[in-house]
Image 1 (cartoon, rainbow, N blue to C red):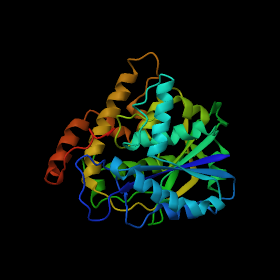
Image 2: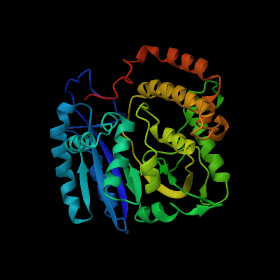
Image 3: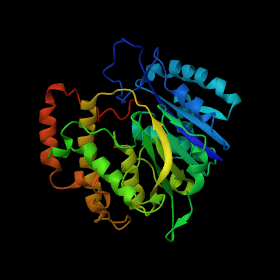
Image 4: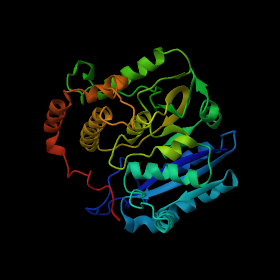
Length: 350
């Protein structure tokens, strides 16, 4: 049976003052706002295969945990008649930490504080449920009735003599395409950060040119990833990554010899609410420097496979080139008037 794991992010009521310790997510749901999770769960009702669903609940601050947990419990209750569904929230996290401590294991990297840590809970809970295959989607997405069938179709099977450990799917957006919208004049731009969406689309074009339904990929999207149990057990998300944890996971997997493929027909319909583009820029700068260095260091270690920036071109590989520093400095200067306090230090609050 496929386990579908859905993180859901929540923030304070509309207009309520924030706390300086609040975590930053792209588009969390206000406690008194219209949630996106319900539409996602509604779409799952149409899935024709047997599945179980886990909702991982995260908040911007621990003082909201109890209220949000009750809110999400009420939202998922009606769906229990349609398919098995449970919630993993702060109280469950504390129980797991207690068990880890009992066995002398590290508790610190198991949290709901930041995208990577939340994604690790997406891996941990299915492991505890003895899941064989896990599909990670997000709470602002809709799925087709055959989503589960396609998610498990190739996982673990051999293609060209090697098993597939992870499957990456596509997002389809409200404008009717999996290609991202390019800002005006982006194709004529020189700076890498101005060309980010161009590079993404160039990669999608490259994947399309490759023969077959499942092909090599340099991109994974956190809201449409499928994991084998072997991958779940052996490769975590890096807690130091605050954004772009999906592609970083691809890098980690490849370092340890695991194989990802893109399934051109594994589709998710993605309807993200608006978010702050300046926050995205700052977090992108941090993660590209981090991942660039990670790839460079792979050649100096005997316990991982050596990776090359060329493997990941056009996107994100172009960001791992020597010009990253100059382009990042220029992009940040252009946006410095709207920059807020950096958030990369807010990875844990407990």
